[in-house]
Every structure is written in C-alpha cells, then in structure tokens.
Amino acid sequence: MSTEPAASEQLLMLLVGAGHLARSHGCFAQARQLFEQLQVTFPERASPWLGLALLEIDRQDYARASSHCRAALAVAPDYALARAWLGVCQFALGEGSQAVRTFSSMDAHDDAAGRLAASMLQLIHALDRA
Image 1 (cartoon, rainbow, N blue to C red):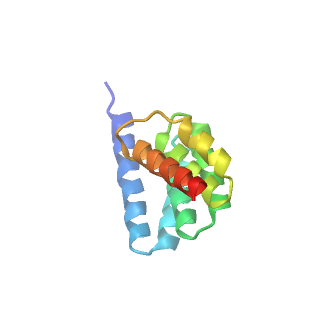
Image 2: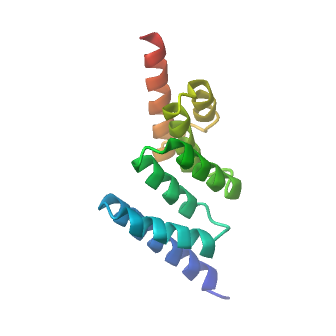
C-alpha cells in the first residue's frame, strides 16, 4: 500500500496554507507565485485556483477572481467554497440575480461556505427591501 497520494495531498494542503499565510501578511507576489506553481503541479486540484481567486478578491478584481472560481469548479464541481466565492464575485460585479442563483444552488450546511452563502443571501434580500 503506497502512501504517496496521502503524502502528496498533505504537501498540497501545507503549501496552500502557506500561500494563504503569505496572502494574509501582505506578501501577495509570493502567494501568487506559490498558487500558480501549485496550479501547474496539481492540475487536478481546485484549491490553488481558489487561492488565486482570493488574491484577486483582495485586489478587488472580481472579474479575474470569478474566472479563477470557475476554473476551480471545473476541476471540482462540488467545491462549495469556490461556489460561494463565485457568488460573492457575481454580487460585486453587479450580477445580483446570478449571485442569488449561485447561493441558492448550494446546500445549506453548517460550514464556512454555507454560512457565507446564507449571509450573502440575507444581505441581498435586505438590500432589495431597502
């Protein structure tokens, strides 16, 4: 029984975490370089794409972030965080009805993605009533 896939998965998780840590400390160029390399090294994984998306969200480039979220979803269609952040991008781009569809298509789980989607739906509905 080989441990290579488990070790590879663990390495990916550690490196993605390092990218997010770099991002949170304002080391955007280093984070981008790491996420781009991970995207090439692990083309079947969605988390590097989401890392790139979050970098673009930090820069308020929601169109590029949306593109990265869609790339993550092409690799992993059930990746709830990528779907939730795609909805945030859609909302920021003025695509409110599309954002509502994106958030509404998600299962309401008690996880970060589900909470983000539920909060965004509440915000959108509150803004519609205002």
